[in-house]
Image 1 (cartoon, rainbow, N blue to C red):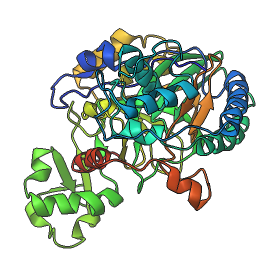
Image 2: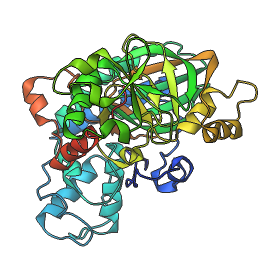
Image 3: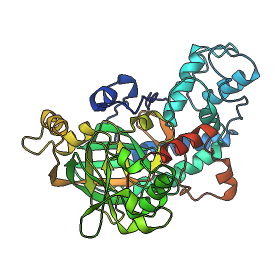
Image 4: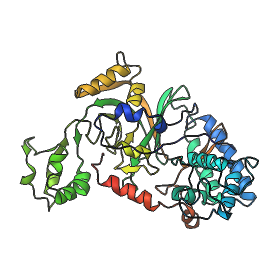
Length: 414
């Protein structure tokens, strides 16, 4: 088994005024391209092979636990924990047994840790942080069960999905565009929180809204907006959110009792801008859940290990590239026009002709034709394992929980 380097990197300041071109073009934040789609006969065959490989690993006793505290295992470290780490990496093919014979955390071990992190959707630091340690200490039989569960999901998409389609893998928080069974673009995503999950569905992308308004859903008025106004009476004005009554007349925040549910009787709309909660573009998809795909001003989420931060919608990195792919068959809609439309601030809706098939899926384990075996946390607990197996799954670390709380304080996006 081998590993392909992939995955997000460090976050940047989300307060940049015009971040779309600079942030999205930083090489260290890009997602490594691959020609093999997640939903593909080649991925299905590779996952079947991965199951056989992991059955052999389990039959041989699996792997031992890696001791040590978060951050203690890094370049230059020595001792029994490093020896245990090396053994763990060798079992899954992340480290060549002949690459190093010392008990030192050398450059070979560091590179192997980076490969392991890439396979598990973690930021490739080369340091065994808590998230990496948790992933390493998931038992081999649990990983095998993940593969066996997900092969069933992959088989359900073995039919013809269309010449052009989009796959959004929720546990991986990753979106890919596919054309003629080849990946065209990949996009790191922010997806639904554990208590506001992104739905699994098969749908179509219908149109692109440039410089959109954001109308606050009733659920977010109750859960987010009312508490924020109780804490800060200037919250709406600071975020350019206007209030309208049933006659479409604008009213002022002082006219509402924020210590009641009175606010749910009104419509709240945020003006278009680069700081709009939807960013500069929204992609509408046909569905009964009220969710869609869109840009975001909070670009820092794309550099996090934990990207389960929305109210069900999907926030996309490099959203302009995504829109360019969706509209590539539309006469006159090249990247230059997309950039110019966004820069103008003009409200404009463009139909996607013909509509593009979109699949939101829940895949936590899969193989690739290159022999790479990928795993993601069963964040929504949908794999359906026994309680014993579920307890073996990695739990969000304190840093992960802090990230979730940090993004909960920002305007949400359903």
